[in-house]
Length: 320
Image (cartoon, rainbow, N blue to C red; front, side, top):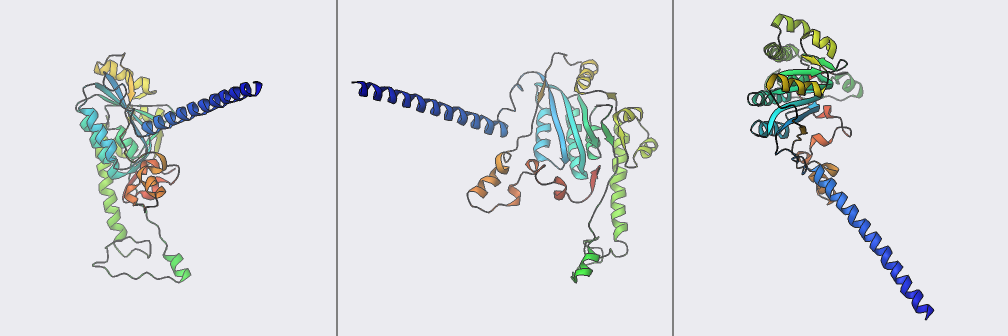
């Protein structure tokens, strides 16, 4: 009889352990599902249906981010959004990317009051975007400015000569695909690039002149590529106030009549390919398929592969 009782007790203990591990597995599965949904932006809309101030992140290397631009355009037509704070922390990026996001912010500002809150830095294309707002706030130790344009290309002709490699070219004209990293630029090649840079630089200067309380002559003095602290930026009128996001919100309340009880809620671009192992590209790799570079979401790569290697053409970037 005692053996039967022991057997029953053992079975009960076993069932209890199995129940515990099954419950643990279900909890872990639920956590994994929630994390996956969060990574996919499933919860990004929580709270966005009631009146609020939208926080829009402008961070990292700037490119022509279609998901971000689409989100900004969506905010402009959302009745629940009463105002916007751009949360900027960027060294800049491509000039085209800065221009595209600048224009999106200006479209937004036609319908909603927009302030910019600068974190560590808003340099080059980052500052370009900040200037698109109606009010720029920065910390005393923030970095702003670096108004200018740069074009870079490697020059490996001496190395190729040393290792005995010659690159042969047949092209329609001497300036096609110049300057080249494989040989010394022919006469006129660098002048063409300088003219291109001058055009973009003058456009950048005119843009800042239009957006800031400065004359073009004053902007030209500041637009020599240098960066400024937020404190100095305030003195030079590149910045409107010192402080953080709370100062930006206070301006929206005082100057634009927003309710001071409005909460600031995060908005994040919807990136269907973001997530574990670069999303769809990672799934293709795990299933043994070949990966197309177009499947990669560059916004998931910083920290693993430097974003600068994906940039091409004219840059508006502060290279520290």
